[in-house]
Amino acid sequence: MRETAGTAAPLTGSAEQPAAEAPESAAEPLMTAARTGATPDHPDDPPRYAPEWLRLREPADAAARAHDLLDPLRVRLADGPGRAAHDGLVVHDLGCGTGSMGRWLAPLLDGAQHWVLHDRDPYLLHFAAVGTPRSAADGSRVTVETRRGDLARLTPDALTGAGLVTASALLDVLTAREVDALAAACAAAGCPALLTLSVAGRVELTPEHPLDTEITLAFNDHQRRSGLLGPDAVSTAAEAFAAYGATVRTRSAPWRLGPDEAALAGQWLRGWVAAAVEQRPELREPAARYLEERLAACAAGELRVVVHHTDLLALCRPKGAAS
Image (tube, rainbow, N blue to C red; front, side):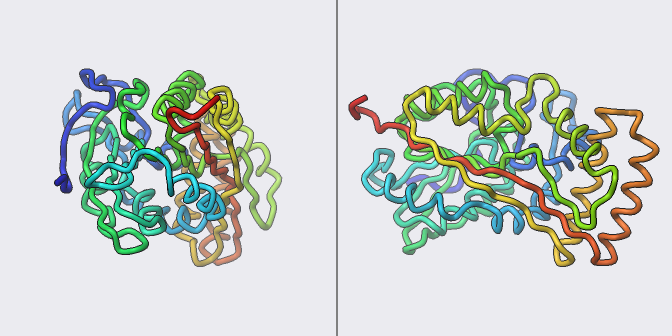
């Protein structure tokens, strides 16, 4: 019987590589600031991402995820593969961070579950393993294991026996090639994929400000740096999964931040503006004034922010199903 573990098995079964992997928060702008401030304890260690940010955003993530994608997922899981004899449904959570996806989803699904948590950072894997729920919606047992490895080298073998693949805020920090590899691996495993909270490239701030559009465009360009998909992630992923025969559904999943979420909105603003300035240094001075004004409005309870995300459900053909 598998219990909570801290295994260090690489995701692909090969030696671990130094390339960075994105945790659940990496698609959000704060991580630009977190990356510059989060240094490993040893030069060979992976960068460490702030669990404080992940905890801060977790309630907004849970409120934003598209619940109406769960019904078609439940129908598919009811008779699908990936239910091991002892552990039930085997769920692979890619780039799990501190495990917010499991805390949200495991209690919403019936039946025994075994969660396999993948991340590059052992520090975050510890938080994820400790925080995973131990009961499903119907009271069935939930078990967990951790695997440290690099998602950029995802192979179909890594998902052998999977009944479901999940990820949160991951697609937009992948390249088109990595998304294609993910789609291919899920198709080979014959399992569905629920991939939530990919940035959509749109934000709405109330009241409006003349710099809103310019900051948004600069941030979106920053998200696309070095070949990353950024706001193009969901459309690219939908095409990739469809090419492998999956049925794809997408839904809007916006953060809606008001006075009760002022702490999150403030942190989000700092990272959002910092990324825009990193992309376009000429914005530094006007952006500094803009940020000061926006933070003051946030502290006064006068700012409303909608950060648009998209959730994607890909229902890959079960193994052995007719084409």
